[in-house]
Image 1 (cartoon, rainbow, N blue to C red):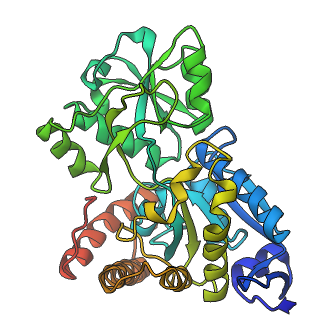
Image 2 (image 1 turned 90 degrees about the vertical axis):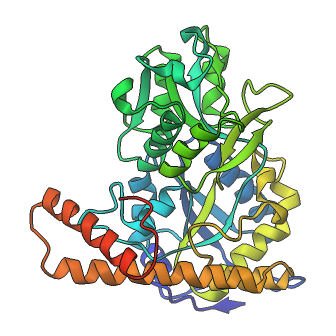
Image 3 (image 1 turned 180 degrees about the vertical axis):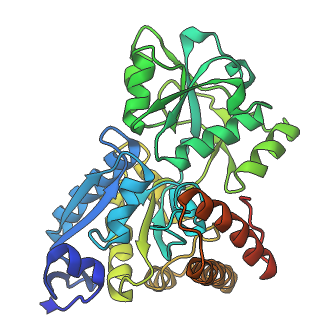
Amino acid sequence: MEISLRTRAVAAMAGAAALTFAGVAAAETKLPSTLTWTAYDTGSSGHAQSVAIGKAFKEKYDVNLRILPGKNDVSRLRPLQVGKVEAVANGVGTYFAQEAVFGFDKPDWGPQPLRLLMSSKGSAGLMVGVAEDTGVKEYKDLKGKRVAWVKSAPALNHNVTAILAFAGLTWDDVTKVEFAGFGASWEGMTNDQVDAAFAITVSGSTKSVASSPRGLVWPALPFDDTEGWKRMMAVAPYYTKNTVSAGTNIPKEGIDGQAYPYPILTVRSDMTDELAQSITEAMLETYDMFKDGAPGAAGWALANQTFEWAVPYHDGAIAAFKGAGVWTDAMQAHNDTLVARQKVLIDAWTSYSKDAPSDEDAFVEGWAKARVAALEAAGFDPVIR
């Protein structure tokens, strides 16, 4: 069966106005013969999970899922922005792109009209791992140590900022070591170029450090440290407490930690409802096929979805969740509010850009002020100022 798909994204990627869809009669799920999305570097949990999903899609629907690794938020999201991929298995950079902050505040970016299809959240944590040979036991012990900063990866770096804040530290208290990508930052720890880096605890990149002479530890974020959590949440309000029990060198009893959805399957708002619904339904239908295919993949379970998060869901995904009987009026109200927030941001960007400074630094500085003013005027918390 052939169905025309006229989204700009697929047209740009395929160089054609139509794609052949593979229909699944039992569930009426219709997908293009090839899907493409970007993910974190090879070796990352997000990449491994995407590969496992692709294997399931191939087996069940005869759909080829091409995974393009991207070393940072910009390299992952740029193909989506220009319509060369359908989706991004991303991290919290999706939120930053929506908000037009941390690198997405430059003239060639601005607030991105992004939507979610699904996300993963399980027993893994999103934490700063530390080389055991440093003697670090608590995050406050990172003072004076070498900490990884990944270029053009605000999601990773902001997370480190938040965890440093938990310990009452800032980047001024540590030695910043820059790396070109996520994978390189963990290779740097193995090679004794850096002492600490951010990752999901189940990431394959952590294994080489753990098996090296340096060793690997994950300091805890004690739930009873009220002030520490208050400082951290002020920097990263999308964090949630999570007893971390899965990952490299995580003790069996688990540790007090944090997590937010990762990977987050992100698409553009102009993806057709049909395609968004079909991808979401395919994820639900093949879950049992891919859940054991990569560390952390079980986190994609329907029961693990964070339906009231910081970025809105696509209407097509909502249709799939309604079909599964899990979407509520409260979730819809929350989603509508997030869509309204995006509109405020996009309108503010459009207005600001008309007379914005030509100098990039001045442009970014002016946008930061315009963004805060627009959100506050509309009754929204800017969060990042």
